[in-house]
Image (cartoon, rainbow, N blue to C red; front, side, top):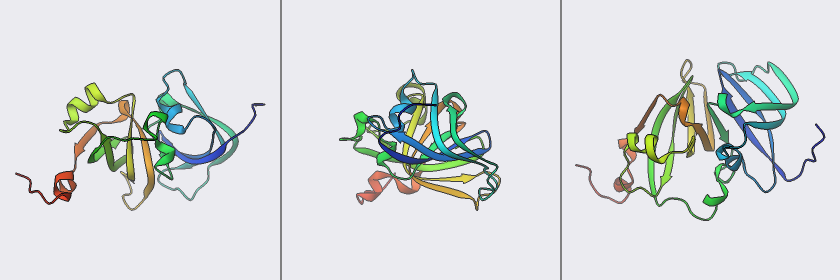
Length: 184
């Protein structure tokens, strides 16, 4: 590959089919979120990529100077900071309503915060009408289903909607409780 590398590399963990691919994503004028949400992009090029099984993250199965991720097989991507998970249209404003969500994808339970403009959150409506092909959660923890002591934390997770088998709002941390209001 002879493409010119420019911009600041972002460290990203990609999770797919029981594996974690950790590597550098070259970002310049487009963020990881811009690439993930772009429906005209089918592949993501990762540099200095390490492949490891999710049940043994210390084991490096392989190292690649350049690897290609297919978005269609991606379960989720985890970034170190929230900023790396923002699309260009989200850089200056996020939804004012925040909801703590739990969801499951193959091999993982993920918890994080959804920022939205929707005042009342309905998981069915959100997944069927509001969500794109990927959804973004912030302040994320992902637990391995088979070994819950193995967890991954990040500033943002970009999650493939098609891989979500369960999604629910966590009632223990509703926005209205933070304002001192009681739930009925």
